[in-house]
Length: 430
Image 1 (cartoon, rainbow, N blue to C red):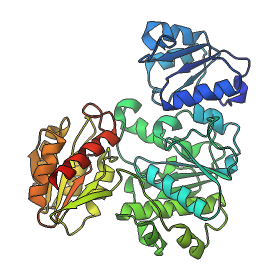
Image 2 (image 1 turned 90 degrees about the vertical axis):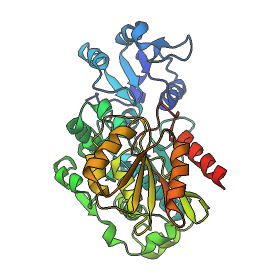
Image 3 (image 1 turned 90 degrees about the horizontal axis):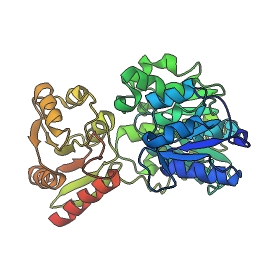
């Protein structure tokens, strides 16, 4: 675990910056605002001559620093990071530095394998509708410590990835956990380590309440990692106000209930008032690529769920269309996760066609053919072929659902580019 130090503690120290992605750039801006010139800039893939490659002298330069501020994508399981810490160089992250001196009684961190972006967006929408000034930050968008971020806010709602959680030593007042399933096993070094890292935020000093998905058997099994004060939330407890958000799927109803419960626990004025929360729920825009309808052609609906990068949200997405024929586009970058739970969740779905995309498509197809024999399975060469095949199969009134249960890397730069390809193909059909 990194030491508990704050951004202000970095003054008069030699600070190395390791990783220059979106958060890394925010770290640079924060250091500049504090008047701290970085001792060295290091990245695994240097973009220009001012940045030293990690394996081209960067690690040696970082070893000369008093503190290293890393980006979340640099895993704590890496041998080079452990070598720095073994040599006595503290390695920390931006979120941990910020929480160490923030007013944590006004901070809600939202984590979970999936659903955290939607839940963060809903929490921000509800709090804003209640007349509060809110910064949505962390993995969701703006880093709360970025000098370019608004500072005159009442509350911080921070989406927190498992990558970021490993850099945190003190917690916010409230943590919300939306789900738990396999993900990022290559980064964390195994499933047990992933579960511990993902839920580590819940046990940090200062957390007084955890709000968690009560419908998740896996979370219930790991309740010992959630701390002593947990409020469990079930989708079946919906009093009806969530309809104003216009959400698809039971899992999104639960995300909304978790968001509201977390605001109540945080102490946001009006969050416990049913009438006010129902009014605040109106006109929610939702998130792109999260169960987003993108068109209808000849009675067939096309739905973009490109943000789905593992099994859990894909099963939830399919479940949102009960009673309809669904052509499911599944597959992408292969991280080696177990797809047996996907087969188990789809077993018996004779009204479903699985169109398996490269690169993990062949492996998913084999698992589905073995574990879900009622599901029709076809392997396709690319997304465009999958969309066209799904369209013909889903006629006259079915659904073509892009919910890949895999990242987009390799074929696409990110999930946004994958979604854009999906939309272009749909438009070509019409």
